[in-house]
Length: 559
Ligand code: SF4
Image (tube, rainbow, N blue to C red; front, side, top):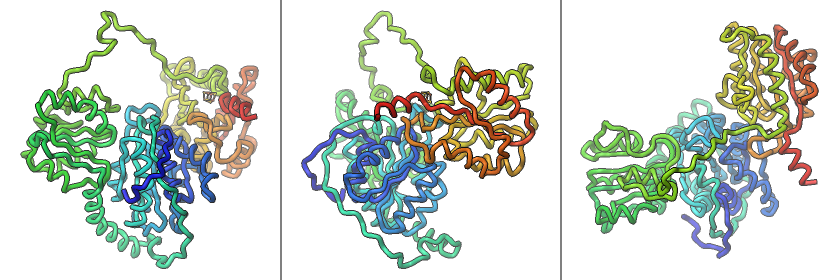
């Protein structure tokens, strides 16, 4: 790391907060993001703390794409910028993210992407290291809170040194666990700069081709940087070099928890390489594997290192990981889905399971299943009662495709659970609207999309514009609870009071924009109005309005 002096001061940070503090202490000027578990707490910390660091802007944005674009603008002006998102948010930001790697980055630009192996609160397990590799930019993968702080602070220097964006990849357990972090001095912010070569930021084909060639040229220096990075630690001295282990991220911690038993079993600890900085440190990998007959890979997420190694190591080196075992045929000994943990890493290392309190009991206790539920009295419950009533009336014959009810991502996704069980799709942010349009145009007579107010603002508006342009016979049902509830009640990008004029501005006919109060006493009345709009053969929008209970509780607490 470039700046190893410490202030001697320590703070107990979540992994997310360590990223935020690392950015602030690196001389951050602006941070932009969209809430999404497990990344949300990065921006929450920045919004709460940035006032102590002078002129630092920290803002939620409409979505991850607009956040990444704002950060590009900050870097363009010479300042240091951070963008925060969860892994699937990176799909939304992919356009500016990938193209950003072709620009001559000015102020350090860092993308903090938090992955969710095990899908605790996500629709997939994608691994952001693939995105960094795809964009050909460096990626830093901390395995504790101190590294999250140090690496983020360092990432701005790396970005300015190589003129590329840099990714910090977190995973859920690190993002949401707290540990002490030793702090370093706070740096000055960069001054604004006047751009000298405007073509560096202009991706017209003639300049983009040149910039792409420059990015490819940088790969050799990035590879050398990665090989020299102290976090990519190679341990060969006094080790069993015939059996090697490569760890990354939290896999390194779980490996170390089992190292004593592993050493006792084999009489020697295996040779080991821990990888925390990418592109892959190829020299270190080759040095480790020169003598190794077998290499076990312990990485959190998808088999990113394993896939690469299977392509670069000679066939004489046997590799085991998530994809395959040492025989090259059987399934890998490392869990393919979900998170690594000390026990499944132990099993992958060939160690017997440790006795637990539960395993010592003759009858293990049965813990009740606790599926997620809406808060008691949640306004979405009253909206779904109405939607269920209407859709059942319009779709009386079981299995006859009269109604399609697509949904989106938020607390209201629980419309899939009892007692409603009526929504039929959850794919990605904003998809409900386009899907309802497609289903309607495929011939389903009563197609409706259910979406929250913040998801509509995130990426639903363009889908509605499409439906309006085609005058598709469908109904958009917005469950407006005036907050981004699922991620902890962040403010929406504009207040709900502006939703009506926004929707009218997108071209919805005023007589088919209906606002309803999501309350029990209005079930019959609301059902009649919703049914009327679903029977209308054009685009209609029905907004169910009532504040989220959790948001109301927080508002009252704040006074
Ligand atoms: S947090 Fe708000 S929107 Fe989510 S379930 Fe609870 S009351 Fe409903």
